[in-house]
Amino acid sequence: MQVNPSIFKAYDIRGIYPTDLNEDVAYLIGRAFVTFLGANKVIVGRDMRTSGPSIFAAVTRGITEQGADVVDIGMVSTDQYYFACTELGLPGMMVTASHNPKQYNGFKMVKQMPQLLSGDSGIQDLRHLVESEDFPQPTRKGTIETYTFKDKFVAKVLSLIDVSILKPLKVIVDTGNGMVGPILQEVYKHLPVQLIGLYLDPDGTLPNHGLDPLQPENRAELQRRVVEEGADIGFAFDGDGDRFFTIDDRGQFVSGDFLTALMGQYLLEKYPNAKILYDVRASWAVPDLITAAGGTPLMERVGHAFIKRRMSSENAVFAGEVTGHYYFRDFNYADSGIVPSLYLLEMLSKRSQKMSELLAKLEAKYFISGEINSTIANPKAKLQELAERYKDAEQHTMDGLSVNYPTWHFNVRPSNTEPLLRLNLEAKTREEMEQRRDEVVGIIQS
Image (tube, rainbow, N blue to C red):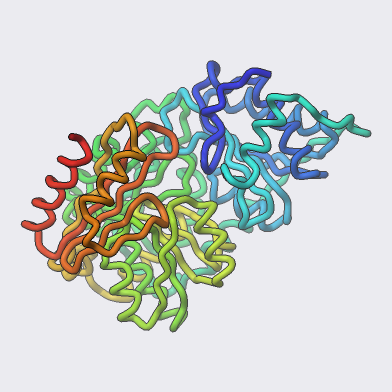
């Protein structure tokens, strides 16, 4: 079958419904998944997108017609899906397009937790199978059973913290009509916090705002409400609930770098001398705080498939990516939105400090640009130009190009999905950060 090859991405399958990804494509992807893995039984869940029910029906038809049984876990967040795959020890397909706009859909695919299918490990194999439709003849038709595990999930995430020490914090949560609202309420009703919810009901029409809290317009209301209502903290989640974001008591957005640093430091109190992963874009704050707390910081390339694999092989307790993915060994190396929210509540309760006070030391020392995206016709040539321009610096190419000087550093990497270069830069003073940022952006865009 002729399929738009661009839907087969680095970490998942994702495309616009019904032009790039429709029921016919989903049916073949289901057959290809069973064929590639030799699976006998597959977990399938979905998010709240309006195309979800028909894509779910098509992919499960493909799975069963290829001879495998389906375990239907219903409409769930992605961290619930990872939990089900762990509990049952089965491969899985989650029908979701994460934080993409509502016209998208796709699949996040688990081989065997914590291993996911990725571009260099399975996703391109699925593409070839879909294009060739070269499937072996099945000997039987699979069945569909349902699996309910909400109480188990709630018990698991609550077991990671000491609920008895939590203070009655005032928390405002915006789940953006994505998948986190229902399960978050089930978890939080066991906590002594005052919960104020925004858009907790899943609604694939997205009547209020988009699903990606990294976009300022999608978190503007939450930031305002935290200040207006005198909340201790605000939490935001992306559409499928595998990413997590924080608004501090001043109503300011907390960078993923600083959250990784603070959470890593905190988890080292629970797990002394542990290993902690961070991605190539991160602030110096992350390795500095982890080292000072007696841990071992390990740098890894961007992307959940790489992070989970490395965490598992290193037995790392925690990993953070600056884009809001947080991974936990005690949650089978998976990323979750709800788990970091619980650790932050525990940390604030234990420290008896405001979030803004915990951030103050970092904000005085580390000056980060945030991610700056530029559309570039030839990203490869531009990376070579930058490597040449800064050849007197320490450089590495683990993921894109990283350039390190004593007082400033940057990483620039091509997007996996678009003709973009993504720049993250940091310096030890605000003046140098702004000057170097403008300098490097000038070269990228020239």
